[in-house]
Amino acid sequence: MTYLISLNPATGEPVGEIPTTALDDIPAMVCTAREALSCWSHLSVEERGQCLLRAAEDLSNEAERLGELLSQEMGKPLRKGVGEVRFCAQSIEPRVKQALAALQPRRSVDADTESTLYYDPLGVCAVISPWNYPMSMPQWMLLPALLCGNTVLFKPSEETPLIGQAYAEVLTRHLPPGVLQVVQGPDQQGRALVEADINMVAFTGSRDAGKDIMSRAASGLKRLMLELGGKDPLLVLDDADLDAAAEFACANSFENAGQVCVATERVYVDRQVLACFEQRLVKRARHFVTGPWHDARANLGPMIHERQRQHVLDQIAQALAAGARLLYGGVNHPERYIQPTILADCRSDMWIMQQETFGPVLCLQAYDNLDEALLLANSTDYGLGAVVFGEDEDRAWQVARHLEAGMIGVNKSCFGTVECPWVGARQSGYGFHGSAEGFHQFCQLRVISKPLAG
Image (tube, rainbow, N blue to C red; front, side):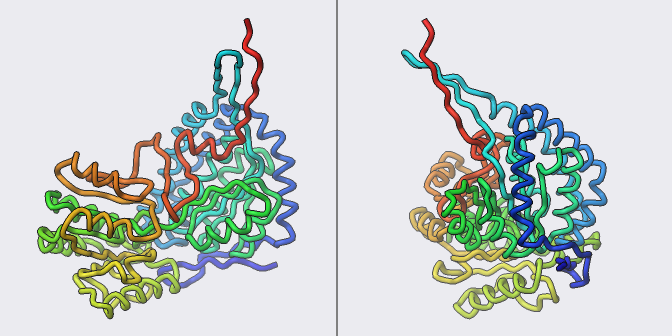
């Protein structure tokens, strides 16, 4: 038997270990999931929801324990780890209510036909999740899959297997046997899971991994929901509240050490206000302090591993060599960390302006008119989130309508209301989750029709 050894990103010391799922075991696990499907799928949405609401109570009661494990394994400050667990516990009830509304049969009538649309379970679903939010990201996919009546094989990231297992164990306390099973392991377990006899793959992670999943799932025409990477732009207009824009830019870029899919990585600023904006950014960047998960002063943890840290350092070095100006940070990074970094005078042909960084780095580029700003903002293959800051809200809204992203914020983050889907455009996503439409993606739509009576 082989084991995954989970390492503390701040020290490199083991947090714990867990057995790797044998590749030969995965087909049998799929069979178990399919056998459990007959029972689970025939429960009502209300009954499935009650199971998950009981799990929510356990998550809330165990938030401190689970949050500490999450922070040790992923590296984020303890208050952030506990906060993630509490958020997951609190968000289950609204999702259950959303499912109850979204999955009701819908009647349709025309001149001579009466039809009913049913949202039936799809079957066995694989959920493959990332390490940066190792509880909330799985929950985004697990809740709709389970509430829609599917059974699930869940593969947490190999970087955070312990919290993934602990989270699944809380859920399985309240689920029938076989409804939720955990597959542990690196990429080869993920590939075997995608190629197994399943009906759907829900994945959050890198664009390259998403392309590989799409290719492997093609032979079985499996349903896909892929949330992929981002390279989110922020447009600062000439009439923007510069203090608010700088506050948002730093917070959204440096949160979770920049290891966020909707982190602000590119900032396009009207040249007239660039100097003032740069001053405000530097002032706010000084508020971010790196440190391990248990350091109460720290609000910015380590990079998840040395490979990711080196990727960020390489992007910074290439940008500086190509003419970027170091505005803040950027050098003398402590081992395992990246200090908050701001680069000015960036250009769209730089590597760091085209490919995802996933680290605490803000890149600034000036523009002279809105046409240029939009051209620059839309110049990558990504399209997850985007933000516009401008005091004339109507004008900022019109700018937002020309951004090629799935989610766009005006004077705020790109997050929408609780009823809105989480959706990417272009190469940042395939399908979406959240919202009634998101639930429907985990369903087989079935239409039954009869002649209209009378």
